[in-house]
Image 1 (cartoon, rainbow over the protein chains, first blue to last red):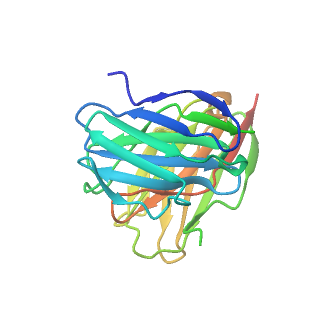
Image 2: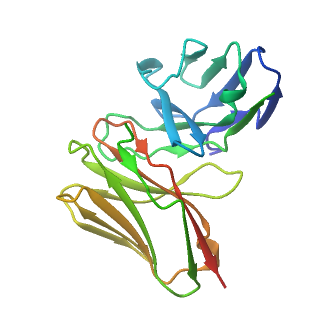
Length: 116
Length: 110
């Protein structure tokens, strides 16, 4: 199993540009999570999906952020327009089901975003 | 409104000694707790977990203790090894979504 695959690993862009981060979860996993890591807040949950349906997007910081999961094997996190304060490492994670007690997430390697 | 807090940003210990990492939470509804370890340029990986019906769970050199009345959990690593140097995140859940703390950077010196 290749694990959770994220792309790009690094993205440098200018303020105002659109950024799209991509994630391929582990096959058979029904839940997918997007987190953002910052020094101050650690790992913040942005949004998560169960069976491709968004369940909780209360962590999405602003309307500039959007996430989609068109099928069980692909998800995107989009920032439009991007701002310097969006610079962070964005992680995607998947699990068998967020409804399982003791749900263990498997994380991807992350996408490091730098907005100049 | 940080529901899971790790108040020590960093910890340094000598190889062979015990490492103790602490975590506090505020939400009494949390019923499952996990620790993740993260190396640079990698994603966090699951380390150990504990259910709220227990107060201790052990896996090799790693032991997690839970004190529900104090809303506090800790991770003990004995003996510490240089390869344990990483960022450690505690996480809590009651609904399936994991809420993480800020992380503690552990450095184990040879």
